[in-house]
Length: 77
Picture 1 (cartoon, rainbow, N blue to C red):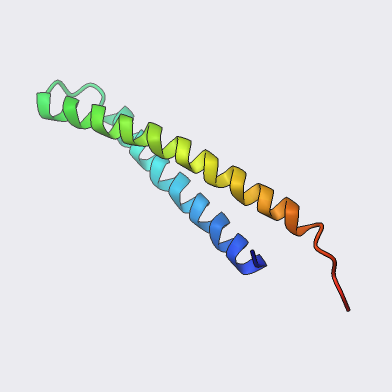
Picture 2 (spheres, rainbow, N blue to C red; picture 1 turned 180 degrees about the horizontal axis):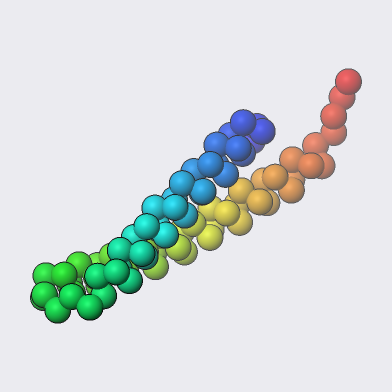
């Protein structure tokens, strides 16, 4: 994996974390709503955030392991 694709992965990870933080903020701000539709939406968003968090952790681990592996690639001048 090239350095530019590693940087691209890191940017994507940061962007996803920002979207997740916004969604979590939305859930906190609207948590006192008693509307049934909103309660169902909260459940759906919470479940999707949990899934996204797991997938993001896997992506971060993969990205970090690829960075680590790249550090051992011999550099020829």
